[in-house]
Image 1 (cartoon, rainbow, N blue to C red):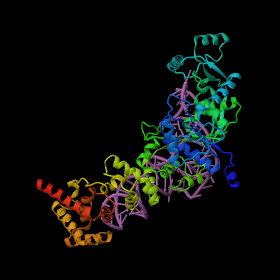
Image 2 (tube, chains in turn cyan, purple; image 1 turned 120 degrees about the horizontal axis):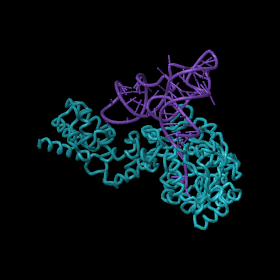
Image 3 (cartoon, rainbow, N blue to C red; image 1 turned 180 degrees about the vertical axis):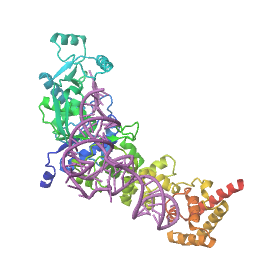
Image 4 (cartoon, helix red, strand yellow; image 1 turned 60 degrees about the horizontal axis):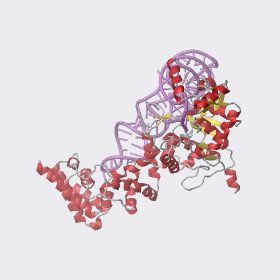
Length: 508
RNA sequence: GGCCCCAUCGUCUAGAGGCCUAGGACGCCACCCUUUCAAGGUGGAGAUCAGGGGUUCGAAUCCCCUUGGGGCUACCA
């Protein structure tokens, strides 16, 4: 018990606050990861909060995708919303903003009562026109303050018109400064904030800049670690913390993940959905490892690190200040590294859905059994850049007869005639050798002997056999492949390849 | 346009005044290993540390300017 208390005794409280307006994004995942690592390293608390106040764009399927994706990555939270029958965890429930509306309403009332916020009756059209005017005059867009000092009579007139009122926060004057944990000292004059900003919509729903502050305060968030795209918004938040009488958390703004052209990573130019990477066969260990090292380093030359090891080494000091391009090649390399580190049973588990998908699309005839997958693991483990590559590596085992392209059936240094002889004699040799000697060593001795007797380079003979039985020029090692295929099917395919090749020869 | 942030090999990065004629990794190229493909091993090309001024005996590291890039500038988050 005391150990638990010690472990959780840190007053570090960080949160991840995704909006369910799209599938889990790579950038969101990394921000979640950094918060998670920061919390775990410090023995603090990691909180998940759903920011679903954009009702028009938020959906339950997106919410599920985000939660599932975070789970898949192994990022677990100590406090979070109720999901799928499970109750909310943590003392500050609910953790879904649309269920916290009364809290925002109360905070809004306080600001209104203190005249730190006021009703604004401007319509969206009016605001837009004003923006266009400013733009035309080459002025920075900002709210002109029309409703900031309405007389009771004016207010009554608008109300009588039935205009909905949004709530605007008075930004006032001065310079807001803060010491960013990553960027250092940042100071921004409030005149650059664009005027008084809306914190509650005309329809009564609260806006992000407002809810984030109310919730971070209520949930006693100690460190706000988020993407750099929020750096310029931070003064708004600080102003709100102060107006509400809340202590300010520490802020840390992470550099952005970039497209190849160095713009903020976007769906348009990059693959951004974590789900897509999962579907292609990237494994959690690799994605976590890769994401952690995108913008952060241990300061050493270590680079293959598990989630636990990352948590142990994590520090804010080594976070890079500049953005980082997402490099899929490096991710693939790491993925291969981690796939090789998987235990055999584990790899079978992870491979199964990908083989099932191959069967679904008809690339293979049936879903292999776990034993069959296990048998093939030693042949493929170090050849898989992604789990999704499994199909091309073993499809020949699970289809009746692979398609044979006569063009690749003949090895580079051979002609059709030699190949026909090679296939025929190989078949004869294997058959003469018998089923009992149909194992790796037996095959190697027999086939090398055949090549030597005929004056062929063993490699050429092997290539002819390889293509004949698999339909491919790149496969796992030949003898293991033949054994996996089995005695009978090996002989059949050699015969079939011979038929295909002689048919071509006859036809030309 | 305004405000803010950033700047080391193509990419991810090490580097917190002398250890740097700048290290590692991905990718690329060669060679070795080898029945193909991978993996692994060895080696190589690749950054005058964006440019220019300072400060200092000494700067990739500190300061300033310039340039370049990015982010933000909604009744989105």
